[in-house]
Image (cartoon, rainbow, N blue to C red; front, side, top):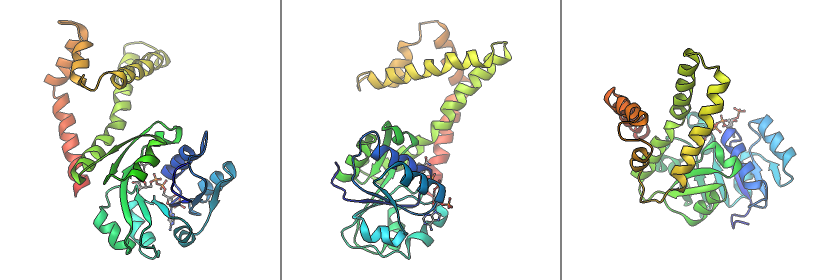
Length: 259
Ligand SMILES: NC(=O)c1ccc[n+]([C@@H]2O[C@H](COP(=O)([O-])OP(=O)(O)OC[C@H]3O[C@@H](n4cnc5c(N)ncnc54)[C@H](OP(=O)(O)O)[C@@H]3O)[C@@H](O)[C@H]2O)c1
């Protein structure tokens, strides 16, 4: 069990649902979880699925829990957080995107230990990788229980990983564009999917299991025979602006994150 005491979630949406599942199944790492009444459907489902989950009003959650997770949408964050009365010494973990710690602290209005995190939906099956900032042993332990955590020393490091997390749709987009092209050439879509999904999965596993000293470009070279087909595709990708488009997209998303 983690030494969080009861853990409270303000905002019971997609990411809270994923985190609560990851914290409680298959074996719980926290004893008690309190969740906001909204979203009603998700809150009810979580309480029905796990005896240790209780639905409570936002202020009751703040009063009861030493560790709190803020998980509302950025657009309503101020109106939800500002009226709540926090206590000095509480630990508050914000997963709200694009709201910096200065603003959060001014809304919280108490001397809390505030950390920020970017959990991904895979935390539900304890396979998440979560960027956290600033380093804090309990926050790291919480997210390590749901996969792995990468602790950022600076806000800049944290913003960079938040930008990197925005490549997820493009990963699936490349899979889609490949199967779409295969289908256009006459391969039934389900065959393309049956081939591409395991191919990508195994490439990711190769990257995960290779030594940290092996860079991704080393792996790229390893999987490209000199003068072969893989080398040709990557060279075409680079020379036709693929890398430039990717870097430009990352620059733009970083600019959006840093305001
Ligand atoms: N989804 C992800 O993968 C992900 C990953 C990392 C970070 N985040 C961040 O996590 C936050 C939540 O994202 P999400 O995807 O979970 O959004 P979401 O599904 O919209 O969940 C937010 C929930 O907050 C509820 N809410 C509205 N007013 C409230 C209030 N006054 N008190 C308590 N709860 C209230 C909403 O309920 P109603 O449905 O009733 O309006 C909604 O279900 C966002 O800031 C997002 O940037 C999300």
